[in-house]
Length: 99
Image 1: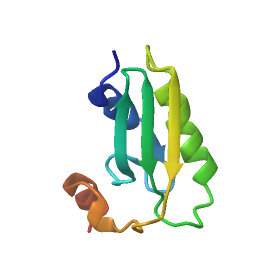
Image 2: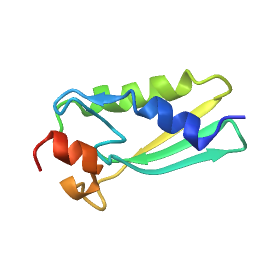
Image 3: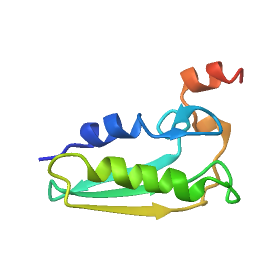
Image 4: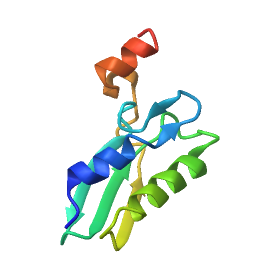
């Protein structure tokens, strides 16, 4: 059975190439659910709706989560409501970026 912690651990390896920080540290993951132990739902955003690497980041999230043993399905919902702000970042990420 897959846990949210399993998914979060993998998402820490998905790096936004522009910032060099994980989608977790940037606060891009708005919601994460494990359904019936093997289906993953992720509601996420990007730093901007015009992100030139949107497809790359979302595909990386999908691929890495799908590779977790026991995961049968990954559903990613991309949203911009509410819009992302640097306040969503972890304190460590803000410090690394000098914010």
